[in-house]
Amino acid sequence: MAAHAKLYQIEGIVLGRRDYGEADRVVICLTPQGRMDFLAKGIRKTRSRKAGHLELFARAQLLVSRVEGSWDIISQAEALDLRPVLQDDYTRGTYARYVAELVMRFFEREADPQLYELLDRTLSQLEADEDPELLVRWYEQRLLTIAGFRPEWHTCVGERSGDLCELPLHPRPADTRPYGVDPERGGALCDQCFVALRTEPGVRSLSPSALSWLQALQSRELDELRAFPLPEGTARELAAAMQHYIAHHLEYSPATFRMMPKGRPNL
Ligand SMILES: [Zn+2]
Image (tube, rainbow, N blue to C red; front, side, top):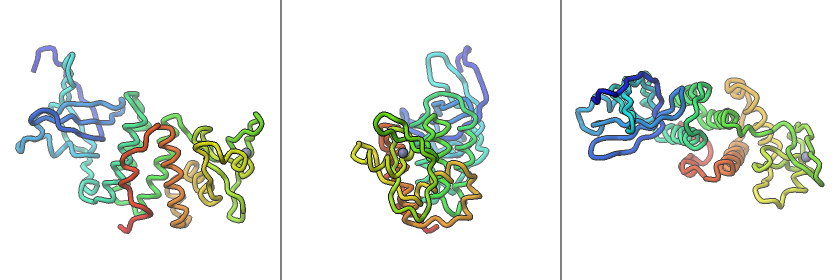
């Protein structure tokens, strides 16, 4: 090790990995200090002691050496939570890939302990949750808030003839006219604004049931939501509305969207 290398300890969650050189790997981690990319030397050799501790989605304690003008190199790694289910179960692993991809796409380097905690909690819960689809919908709302793209689901974001609408939205199952989702304006539209703006690019219809679920997902804790039945049709509509909303703000459609189960999986 070079004389000027500086050692430091940090905890991280593995978001992604890619091969580098003959036997090394770049390990992309979210840490409480933000996203950090490390070099794990020799990790693809069969006798590497680090390899088993740096699996995808694992939370690990890292000893890292900082070398000026080079990668920070992982000297030692010890898994604190390996999350083997996310490696072995294809469906849960697919949701986990989506959860990790959103972090990588929405965040660059900024430190955010709240984001770290959200990711850690979501991945841990994904290992055993009975309804990972609902968990992921709940996660999206929190992630968007931390990323500064909090959707407005409770007040109409529409404008007509230059005036902001700002009508409070109280969707009821008996409502006969659809609401709207407008990613550009950052939230939901009342039925009248939806009619006025429906030809604009990006504006889509939203059923009263889907809108009330979006409101609940944003303002309630996950355990509270489990008490309410989520019909399959509404679940699909929520997935489509959030994919649309997220793709608009990322200006990119995450690759993992296409991999996710259509509808709720049998687990
Ligand atoms: Zn309106």
